[in-house]
Length: 57
Image 1 (tube, rainbow, N blue to C red):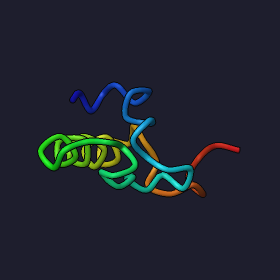
Image 2 (tube, rainbow, N blue to C red):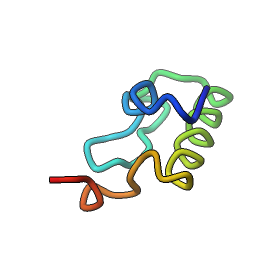
Image 3 (cartoon, helix red, strand yellow):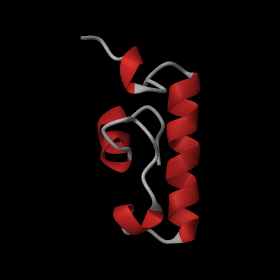
Image 4 (cartoon, one colour):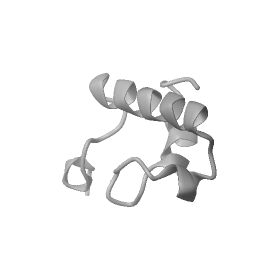
């Protein structure tokens, strides 16, 4: 999972930019953790917003 590929990671977050559950993503625990780590790193590097209010309107 590459944190720089935000279009790929966008599939695994909700419309409120929360990380979706593994049941919704249909991922095992190992891959859900990798997705969560990649999303968190992308947020830290300012590639993805933390909340919906941070998006450009």
